[in-house]
Image (cartoon, rainbow, N blue to C red; front, top):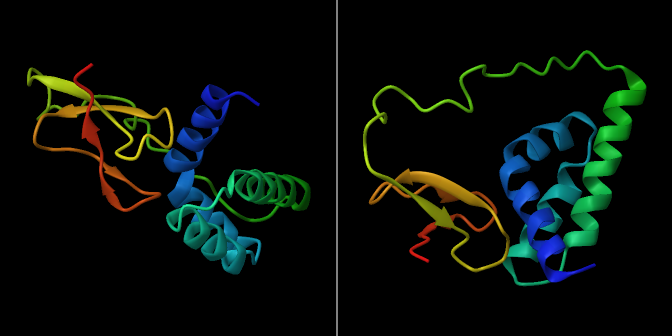
Length: 124
């Protein structure tokens, strides 16, 4: 796979990380989740492991028809009213690990869940 493709996969994992953690609990894979998180933060290439874990979670939750209720926030993709009209810029992965971009006001950087650090302004 190309580096750009891998960066997109990492961005997806970073975005989904809280949900992956919760679903790993449901399917009793929290230990594997913690191992992958530690490996990733240690700089090891854990992409294949993350893909295997998310595929297993998806398969188990879909096939077992569990009682899990996935409640969505209808406003998740919308700009909050208090942010409207403010100057916002794109922020990127602070380590260049993934291709994730998040738009937020300068000085109010979103956090990278995967590496527990603030994302950097993308001034390019």
